[in-house]
Image (cartoon, rainbow, N blue to C red):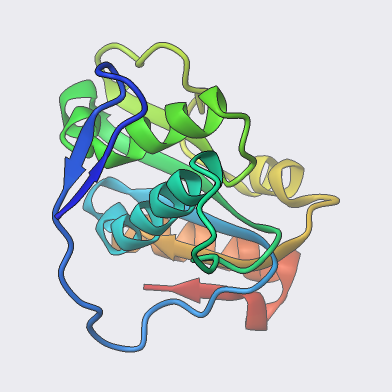
Length: 173
């Protein structure tokens, strides 16, 4: 178990097993992920690594970096309800801690289909379409784009991103 805290309010305990499999191939630059619902689950390990890297930086630990220099995760996440998002506690906690300590490791934009949108997190309005994706990806240092959601989301977002970024940088899970 990893126990991370910076104050009683920021306290977070997390269990991690593994690694299993090859994992994501990370490199310097921005790793964009477009996820719907449970499609975000494969990225929880990466969010965990960001949290550990944040802890390393904030505590000025001389342990080796966990992520490539200049790496950043930009996550666009769509969930059905605020409760669904709250169940993914690691994501908002990591986002808010990165903001608190001014570390440019993780950006989050959220769409909640039904119910209230959590405070302090940038909001997506509606489903992503090609025009929105073009605005999101223009003039960005995107090394990889990952799409993981429903079959419809994978098709529409994946097709648009492949047109915008090229076949080799877009991966659909």
